[in-house]
Image 1 (cartoon, protein in one colour):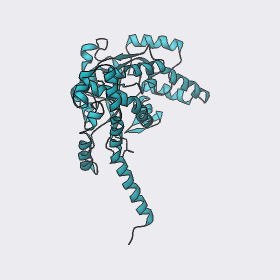
Image 2 (tube, rainbow, N blue to C red):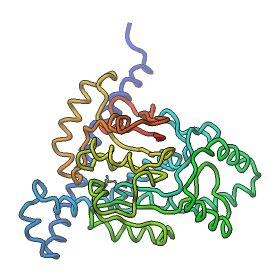
Image 3 (spheres, helix red, strand yellow):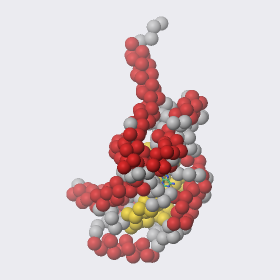
Image 4 (cartoon, helix red, strand yellow):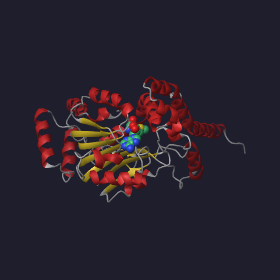
Length: 349
Ligand SMILES: C[S@@+](CC[C@H](N)C(=O)[O-])C[C@H]1O[C@@H](n2cnc3c(N)ncnc32)[C@H](O)[C@@H]1O
């Protein structure tokens, strides 16, 4: 019996989606390659001839400058694709890889003293502004007090996660001048953005100022592998939250450095994760996607500032130390043919 037209159309759509998904990483790489001339020109202008001699294969300076140019263009696009995941994540509204209503949230949202790893050009910096949430609250108050009641319920059930007395004092002072933060999002007292790519700092600084966070957000100009050496102001077990958005793919020795960062979280602290990872071998088509991803990864780190596609970041995070709650999963809507699959969720120490 001949297949019906609707089945044929369905098969054609699936095939088309699969081919487009497989081509997608190459389009991203080509876009990055289109920034090579700008990179060369900017290094020539700065007389960084040694960086030019090493070129994209050898010189880390070349790769950083190249990535900085590329990300200033690609970052906003990546942000608009990821926003629907990242905004609720920082509000704590994620479970099993999916966005859930506030009432079903497992953990409080981001708040207190926060470390943002690899903020890049500061695509997510505005989410650390309490002002935005206060404005939202005013709007919601106009529509009724449902969320207030919900917040009080959440705060009570999370009362075990208490800030230090110094932070409590700071929070108290802030409460006298401003109103409480809406929903499960907590008040932020300090953000450290640890970003080793100097070339991207002016744009990051600009976005910090735009978000009104010049007093709250401090750039740490080195990699997380140097946090113990260069950031004495951050003590072990002093962070309320760590935020890692598409950056653990780029850090050196991820297993070792993720375990070091774990020690900086307070008991009860949360690690908010949206990261891309290696394809899962046990899924249908997993062997093919693993081989394909390994092939793409021959070119990917060169063109994208050292970003690695093949990291088992979920495992590194789970094994970093004991957690009281791990809510980390691949978003179910990501299909088998994603060359850049994600893990998404919150780990609570
Ligand atoms: C793909 S970008 C993501 C930037 C940002 N999180 C975003 O979503 O727009 C990865 C970032 O990690 C940063 N990075 C690379 N090595 C790092 C390290 N050792 N420590 C901290 N950040 C690092 C890069 O400079 C880059 O800004």
